[in-house]
Length: 517
Image (tube, rainbow, N blue to C red; front, side, top):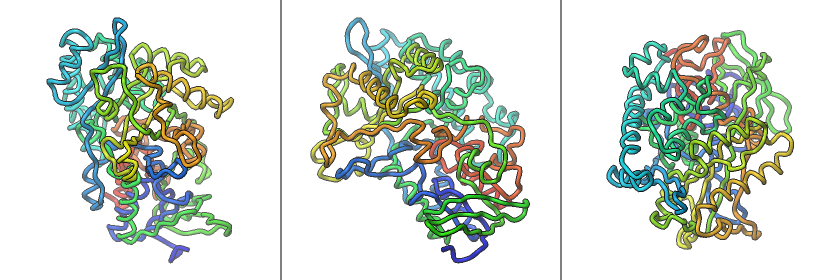
């Protein structure tokens, strides 16, 4: 049981953002109690061994790091490292009946040559270089603001100080810029994918939800690089939990919070632990590392609009990487970065149209990468010696609504279709490369939005808890973007402004708000 009945701060939920908030507040001398419903902390940012009898620790849900500021790692003195990927992406294709593809990475000269190999000249590469020079400049100017009080729209625009970049990313659908700058369908598709990760939208969606998703995917760390967490994603949340405990925070698992009451000055959190009855603990501040829907339910408020996730997450363990039809590319390079499948620009549009009409995409778009090529420590030494590798597939345009009639059947069908799209570019079936678990079953698992809602409490399986927001102040967002209508209740989860992804930013910002920064 907690060692007291009142704390300076009670944190509801032990995902990575809640842990960050706990560590900051405890290091500042506040008394902190964190209550987590699941048996362990970490939320979606955990490592686990999903395959029976196989010592492979996979980042089962969240899997790459881009948005985590170095400031948080330094402030909390975290024992955590990332490694850069030597290759950004590889996209297989077939041109004139022959297998080919686009490998991005390995230096400017090599990437320029790869573009010329695919398109026949250097025009697409020059457009690519100019476009990402623009997003890189935006990243360097916007990313540092994410751990500062929210700027106004005018202030952020002045900080960007580039009218073309502002219009491209903040004002007009990203599809407009992609079509104006690039001519090759495959290149257009590779650019667009960053706007669609966990976001169900068309390139020209007038809501600009695709722009908001794109922005967060290209500004991380001030560079847009997506890095591999050494030891798996669980290494990060373990390090943050250790930092919180070392600073004096009390972390309790297996505790389901059932209600929050507040008068704006003092709060009470009611929770249930195991078979025991409900208990109540008081707090000056309550920080909620859960979705806006969960927060509303705990307060007895009207819920916000429903959220909907749109991804298929597949984890695999292979005996070996498969050979490619495109023999000019080493599979160890192709799978080290993001391996794009069925993600040409027109293919993405077709998949979106089919899903919007209520049917699973016939050619599901997805991206794949191999964690163990960059960080073999997640595998037992004997697996490394035998050449085993992990494979992570993240499918796009698979909204939760598609699974409502029969989650298991639609999951199986979409998985089969996604792997068929991959097999079309392989020189051998992926099934021949899958490892077997201790019971002789292939080492592969798939998670739909409905699975994520059940397992992790994500509303509609939405990995961002709700649509992402532009990182500037809007109506009722408050000073830090974590405030609620109750002065002493703060939202420190992904649903906060500047939330989403594995960043710790909402946790940092909620802690700053609680301390009156």
